[in-house]
Image 1 (spheres, rainbow, N blue to C red):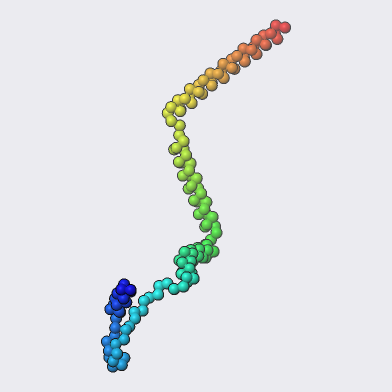
Image 2 (image 1 turned 180 degrees about the horizontal axis):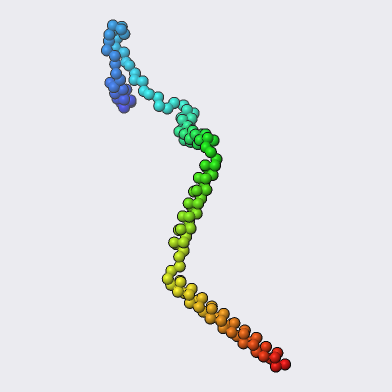
Length: 142
């Protein structure tokens, strides 16, 4: 109970009073401060304000964008999209060619493999030619 009395007395001390004058009948009256109401006191009012804060601005900007889009020339928008696609493609090609380059070791291995393959092809062709020349020789002898 003493805490409640202390709170009440503190509130009475802090509230401003109007000095007695002839206007108010010679009595001192308490003047209550009007606190600014930033938010409504009802729960639904708070919900409405929170909803407006969350989604209202998005709706406004979305409507502005739609209006600007209606005013724009569609050919300009098409040119802009094509330009961005071309830039993106060029950037991707540049990045892939720089990242996927063969190393020095890989190039040497590729050269060795191609040499071995070409040697095998030459051997195969030479054996095929010798077989065909033997067959031709056999045909001529008959």
